[in-house]
Length: 586
Image (cartoon, rainbow, N blue to C red; front, top):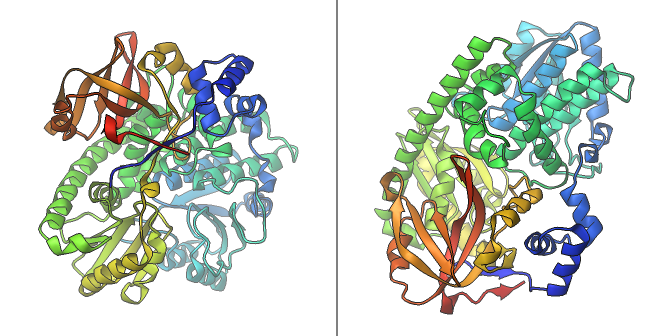
């Protein structure tokens, strides 16, 4: 499906007015207006967001009671165990609470389930084991547990005190825990419901620090810890792909600063291994493409405890070894993902009957359950279909992970197959499941039938929202540098995107990179020439080379700095022949 381009109409007077009031470039003013920040006051609040804009933690549902339980457990010298999820969000959230409780003088440890053997969330065997080891302990979940009704019931029956902190989808029945901490708890109102698990853990740590201070303010020592904790919360926020708006944007904006200035030994080692320690300024992309994948690799390959150890160790030698090992795991993960992606594409191409299906369900014995979610996302993009990949196990079952496409409700789609599944869970965009291998064919057909009835994607579902149409001459170094004030960029706050019409090639395009996967071109308009790169779009070279007439491009401008010299480049997102590039006005 060709992507529809939409953008706001060009209002020259509004652009001039906002540009003058804020003393910013017309380019930045255009983007602010396109993103609903047309008044000077609203634009200033967005551009100058402060750490003090974070809501007081006491507003978060359940956080006051949870903090009281924790402080009481510390005073009674009971063991506190943090039960964290194995992804980046869970690992960073676990590390935040661990650091906080260590500073409080608590006896604290953590439990991270093995992705392959125990699966997501609280599990009854772990709860039984933890109770048998120490029935007086306080158990705190991080980034999981809101759907763990049976597990919470077991903890209650055993007499194990359980606090659940989570941010995921809330089902029809709430778990019967001592305290639930969740930004969207039924019957409550929190000003911002999109915190990730690490964000929730940060708010809880903040509330604990307040109680150990004067009740309202943390002690100077704990305030320093909270500044460092913002950095960990930023990593979890970006990696969990929650909306980078309001509180999340503030957490990431200031967290990126503290990652450089006040990181733990482990984070410093990870920054060094990822070749980020010498960067003058960290970006959200550095988390998304460098730090996050290295932390995630440990959980995906069944060793998430090592990631928590890295972020909590006080031994510099151990920190460096762990960072190096996570880097190696990440390299292994990338190799495994490439192989699974190749297998999946071949499987689709070898089964032409599936072409009529609006969804894909693929299964293989040689796939690693820890990485299939990432690959499912790439398969869905490649074929333009919601996709579920299933790693088959020797016991006759399969562990699956799915990703949506074009707004498909994956959770409800899988709900239609529930009688054929052992378990499933997740949300509209991503979900996980367990299934008997013998039921995979019927699940494939059932999901496809449900999609045929309920999924009717339109061009609007894959539309490319663009901030403004510009001239290449407007995309200069100073203007692009100023656009950084809109960041940090991520989910629901994307890098500014522009269109430029009637451009032409200054020289023939070419492929570059491993396997000729990427495109490199030089684009010209009215005497201005800029380099453009399209990652993963090497197939565009042949099509672009045939363009004898001007065409239109959609791009994100970036600054490429090499050997101290900076220049503007274009990250090409889409292109259209001039005749097809008439964009819809939104």
